[in-house]
Length: 293
Image (cartoon, rainbow, N blue to C red):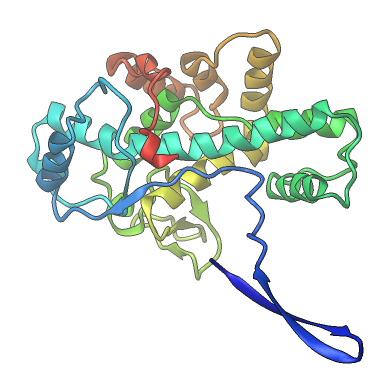
């Protein structure tokens, strides 16, 4: 039990009161918690999954593991094995980050449902923090501002995230996936946060973003989709699906990612082929084990 010692005056004397210190307030928005692990090899990672009965496609809630970095050795696995180990490695982190975004969205909907927001209240300050995170300015009591914020604070279908990660990282074998924890080919122009691409044109100055761990890469990708100007069409399509009561369709949403790659429509077809060929659309109901909540 935490005790506090509080002085106060009584009849001219200082009296010391020993009482229980108030517990810190519970966070307004719950966060998913994962267990960090760093396997030495792709084979070791597969053995960890097997020990947890974590197969592909998942037959139950997936274990709450956060793989810190992809181990070398994916190329030593046969093609089908490589795919399933890669997908299993990434899936818990995608679920956790989507869950965190979903919890933010639920919080927004709850608060907006109460009517006008007092900006000085705890809830009002939390809403302002979320708006700042998603780069939305203006009065949070303005319906248009609320609509813009809700269009950004939303999940990206697991199937789409996994397909893009596989495409951009070469199934976890690319240099930047292994050395920079960058699964999605995200660039930066900050020399303190990036690494020079081997085949960068001489007149270019972009860098490939370096992340401390894989989950940070997943988080940055989701934030990029939810905030980046290039993905307005994606967010509008997703918002329309929400407004019409339809489930988020990864296959359709992929069609709004033509600006993710310079190959445009060919990129979309590759992502759709990845979703279709690996039956990733069946993952919509997969959940994270309760230990990760």
